[in-house]
Image (cartoon, rainbow, N blue to C red; front, side, top):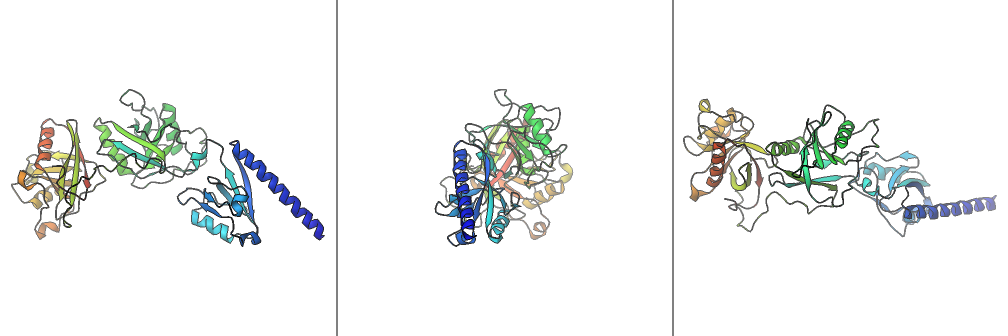
Length: 437
């Protein structure tokens, strides 16, 4: 009986060795397949599988396999996907649960892995990143998330090269679709659409069939989430797709609505970390005092695109960096009397001149009219921008940001207002002041 058991063990070992050799050949030929790796209690004492998993992956993906330990000997390699542990499916578990399942599994521990066919390797990357490169008003990297179980791969020759981004028409991207074109008249490679009206899969399919190459879905709030396909077939979806938050989507839409050209890159995580910088590159200027707060205000209208200084007031909340605002020049320009306002400032930054009443009174009036913030125009060259104060009775009731902007900024805003041009802008807090004017 002992001899028979030894013979069976030897035959089984030889069979596994032949399977490993065959799998190595299939891997070299670029085939996709599954295989199992086994660890006995005695082998565990020698160091175990020696496998590390990618921490940020949406499913268990091998990040490394120690050549001296059992996992590597069984054929496990970087990029393989773990499917099950002792028959338990772990593909949808979070990584901490996967590790716990492996540690608590009884011996022999049997892990089943998937080898991805050549050309599918990028699919195992859990995240895509969206980089907006122009205009400067939008430049940055919005939080983005791809679906965990469907959607295409990044196949562009140079995914870090910025391409045109546009909004679908209608904006839900669900039916009777017209896609925007770039400056050369070609369909914009990256198409943006808002969530709703149809399923994520139908939205992706409709945009892809209309000619979109990459898809950005704007959520209904500022979170980003998985976009489950449910029971729908997704094999025909070859376009990469990601979700971004509501505010980021609204910022893009505001800029596009004014006729500006937006460029962006959609790429696998960490591939293009240098493709875009922060909206404002800090220059070699004296550091701010600790009590200072402000930075650069990027303003755009059909007539100009420039950056100016701003300083947060010493009352109310600071200006928000992540929002593209509409700027409305007050009429009358002192903004002191709510009954005399001739322009609508609800949801916008009300731009008012110094004088006529206190700084805080201007903010109280604009707040009552629904303004999102107040920009005080400084009309004195020698003082630049500075942080203004408010009496205690006004401080207690002010809930919107107030900033001071420079005389030079005011000149551009007044000129745009005379031409009845829309003005949009974004605040960017920096560690230095006095660099933009």
